[in-house]
Image (cartoon, rainbow, N blue to C red; front, top):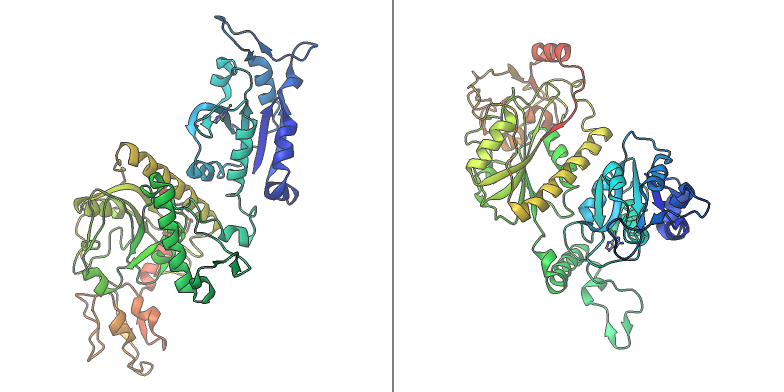
Amino acid sequence: MDFHVLTLFPEMIENTVQTSITGRAIKNGRISLHTVNIRDFADNKHSRVDDYPYGGGAGMVMQAEPVYQAYQSVKRKTLKPRCIYLTPQGKVFNQTMAEEFALEEELVFLCGHYEGIDERVLEEIVTDYVSIGDYVLTGGELAACVMIDAVSRFVPGVLNNEESSQFESMQDNLLEYPHYTRPESWRGKNVPAVLLTGNHTKIEEWRLGESYKRTKERRPDLKAKNRPVTAAYFSPTEGTKKAVELLVEHLTQNPQYLDLTRRKLRREKKIFSAQELLVAAAPVYGGQLPVLENELFSNLKGNHTPCVIMAAYGNRHFDDTLAQMKKILEDRGFVCIGAIAPIIPHVYSDQLGKGRPNEKDEVIFKKFAVLIKKRIEEGEKQGFISVQVPGKAIPDKKTKKVLPQFLDKEKCIGCQVCVQRCPVYAISKETLEIDEEKCISCMRCALLCKKKARTFHYSKIQEHLEKDFFVPREIEFF
Ligand code: 6GU
């Protein structure tokens, strides 16, 4: 990340940012800092860059031209970098904004002084007006330093492992739990006993509890914003599961998972409040949701609960799946605020979707997660907005094609794993035969069989897929 700062006091920025963790990050090249002294672009021998305000009144105004020239002098990598003007009139800076700005390759900060800057140059170059809180500073420099620090923490490699694991505070609108170090007893005050037990599950539980307690006491306004996230997924071969985990990691530190591949969990009713977030994920089977005995997600009920939907597919297309998911969930009390269609390995080909989601996909997940957080913040103020997705909400019924399959009785040891873990009860406990009426050809049994006793004959489909859909697709989101 390259930071450029336009200022009348470059040493104020440099001295601050070149210190401590951001200083280390500059040295190891994770971030860079370039300051531009606006005074260098004054057009008079006194190096003056301010003048009296038109219309009269107190104070001075920074002139447009030196600011514009300073901006033009920035050696930028990107065509139109975001230019942030630090002003108490801006949007109040928060953690989501820090995360969003960290997605940029470079940022330009413009620091004003005196009463402000000529409006005309602001209109020309500024993309974001940002304040760091409701009080007035003498200039934008300290605010720029605050933002550079908060943004840098999201830049990969700026924090080391230990520092990253301490990154929890604020991520979920929760305050950090209290910390203790030696001695065990200090002036008659003891370290909470649970921390000395070595029981990590207990310790984590205690810390989360303290975080909640603290937030409720000290920042009740934040407490209201904390939003438990549940990821409910159907994933016979774990591709969808991996994709949803990668996404949810960027949304919360404490995700709850609901594995709807398990028949038992698909039958359990679950009700979500308006203060939660549901992430619903399913794989695409022939352009639609897998057809189960009961419609997928029909055990979930929302109460104006925001939800994000994910249709994961093997590089052909998601077709109607997102539209279908949106309708099902919205009919059940959810508001679909975002949708994403990541590419995962195809079950019928080891070429399609190979290695997906990859590193590039992860960046897209991160961007999508920031977009969702922004939509949640907006939604909390003005109500959640249902997102438009392509496809038919009620797709044409498909005639079911069952893959020819085969069980090698020589290899089978009768362990019953296939029977127990078939997501649709299609395999007979007694005969081990597959009921073709129920089978969704998901391949879970073939993949789980340790003896490789089960095979599905999909070479025809595989051939056609690999011929027509080999070009890697990009993740789409809405
Ligand atoms: Cl960004 N600038 C100035 N001058 N004062 C502020 C501020 C920014 N944020 C809060 N107060």
